[in-house]
Each structure stands twice: as C-alpha cells, then as structure tokens.
Length: 185
Image (cartoon, rainbow, N blue to C red; front, top):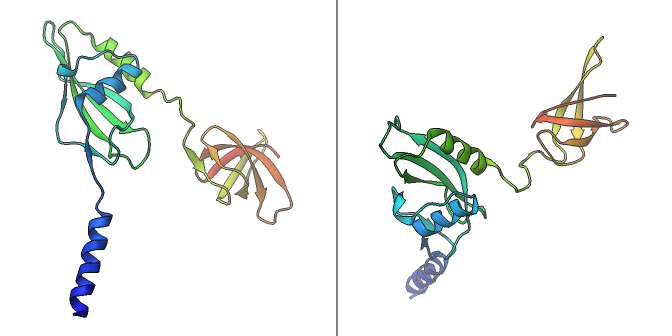
C-alpha cells in the first residue's frame, strides 16, 4: 500500500511539473520583422523546425539577418533570420528562412541586418559587483596594473566605480572586459 501511495505522489508531482508548450508561428516572426521595419509576407517565411515557447504569444526579437546564396540577378535571395524571445526563458533562439522577392539587393539586406542588430534594450552587464579585475592606468610615461574589486555593475564601455583590494582607494574606470578596466588614478 505504501508503494502505491508513493507512486501516486510521484506521478502527481511529475504531471504537475510538466509545462505546457505553445507553437511559434510564421505570423509571429513576421510581426517581429515588422517591428524592426522589415515588411515581409507570411508566405516568405519558413520555419525549419517546430518551435515552441512557454508562453502562448511570446514577444520575439530579430537578432540578425544574414543572406546566403550568391544572389544572382533575377533570382530570389534567401536569408537566415536569427530570432530570440524578448523574455529570457520563453523560448530557445531559432532560425527562420526568409525568401526575398527577385530584385532585392544584398546591400538592402545588409542595412536590414544592421537595423535588426540594434537593440534598444539595456546593454548586457559584463562586470558584476564584487568581481575581481585589473585596472590599467596608462599615463604615457608609465603603465600601472592595479588589482581592484568592482563596486558597481557595468557593461562594456560604461564607467563604474572600483576599489583597491584593501578598500582604501576608489577609482572611476571604464569596463573593457569582464576582468579588465582602464582609467586614471
């Protein structure tokens, strides 16, 4: 009897943890392209696999548009479009294939890729509070390497405050990588 009750508890727990999945459609990809200023007919989009999301209508973003093939005159050009969900964890990144009408130029596709790659979101944080890093100070006459601890989160290119290991000095520094900063003393 205990084994049966235990088995029922496991089955109930497993069935409760199963998450429902919702299909991602060409219409949703078309809407994401349209938000980036690229008007594409749904018939021009093909998904190479069945894509699912954890939400019924996930908001999609276009990460990149990359043409493939030689794009000869009079032939249609195809591009692989990398699509990601705006909310992390809603779906895995995937590729959609877009067939452009004949006469679409490769330079127009390149400008669309630059527009698609532009993100209006906040930059990715590469240095976290409490991270150990090296501050490089180049005065022209000498170059110093100072071990520091980050006091703020920061994306590459942003200015953050850091402190010396003994916490007696603080500096303003520009994030170069997750472990490297530049600045002045």
